[in-house]
Length: 298
Image (tube, helix red, strand yellow):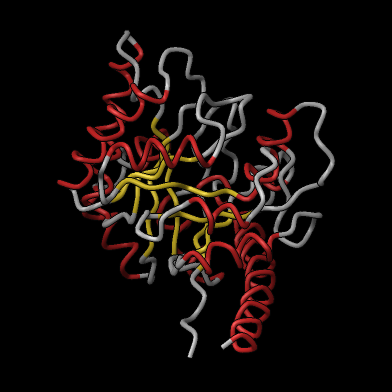
């Protein structure tokens, strides 16, 4: 019998009031956010570094862990680490964020820390591989994984599955893996089958979905930050993406990450209930088709 579908509400989906290009803190209290997410049906949540600092002015990491446990939130994601590969002054601020995320991951029992190379103007794949290995060693001491999110070339110096997989495999860390966002695969022209063909089954993965239009946006950054849609509200082939990650062996939670300029102004309860209901419908339908296809070929 198939295991129940576990859904993770990412920070940007549930962070009502937070502005990606402004004040990146949610307007609502941590306890209320956890209660609301759990009531909607989520069993996972994500937390952003800027928001974590704000939460810690009121709650300790121990208190946060108790609240999450009390509400059945068992899958935790902490993010977002940038400039981890730099050697200039940017590394100082990055290392402060690194410590915060490592501490939070350990205390909260996070399944992974999410990182990227957004804004990378200094490191090629070889240098990123070396620094990724160091970060993974530090994360292993805290009992968590590090997932490198593949981004389009507009944002990244590692804009393909081949690049990100090369960094992960070159680092040689069992806890170093890849965050797969269907939006970024769509915008890089990466077919879902590449997930099965190019990524080893022993590579840790994270999976997050959202929806959108197939047409290439005129303003890519704006589309990523302001125009994502809830699953089922757009044209993306989410089912094909999910079939690929399940075929590859992924059995973890499915995250929903929707950055939308209108949705982040909705009431918190509306965001949580709508995001969960729409995501569950899309994921459940995809799961049924995937399992039916497997049965036919058994």
